[in-house]
Image (cartoon, rainbow, N blue to C red; front, side, top):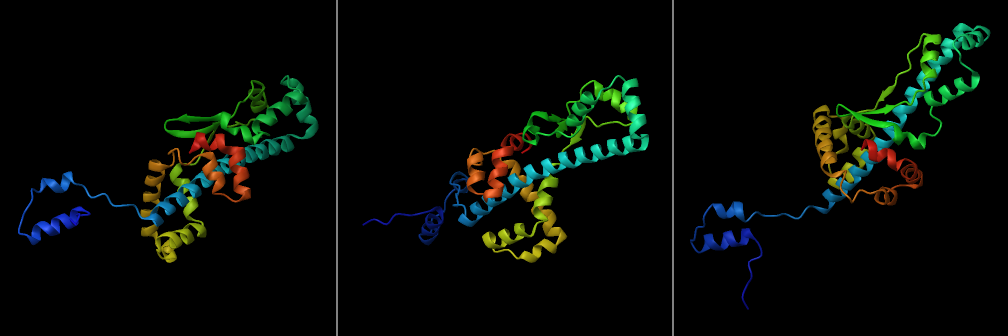
Length: 238
């Protein structure tokens, strides 16, 4: 029975043993394709899952914090003016209580599951754009306050750093790759890890594999509910 050479290394060894040489170009043409380590693939999937949920929550929190801060500033201005004087000023600026309620809802959007409708891209960055009604300009003038039209969302690298600040990231890294958990205390390793993580996200995150069903099936109940509610938002900011 003839013996079959299994790979290029065996072929190279056979030729050397029998005092044969081969053209160097063979090596570039016969590229050795190594099977990806299973743990590495699992680690990649783990990181994509951590990034996906981290990215969605990071953007949600940023929008909500900005809206809350803006609402607090408006309240501070109203309290400073005083309730009676404020009501008189509303009439002077042709504003009504129903109008004020409508403006307030735009400043503090009630239905956060529809935030995705307001996500825009500008200069390679992502923003949440408030849908301010014309009466908002009157309220701004009345209060002497500017309500930001755009809320700048965090960069992808910022989300990655945020994910890596969690202990779980380094625990999973140790489990799948066997690398020491203590690396989380080494600034140089963190910087290098973050850059590689960012590159991996840019390369793989939009692959069909990482679908809504994928993230739900790899999540606990609480995270699965988040994916159901905010999948469209994630698609806008991932």
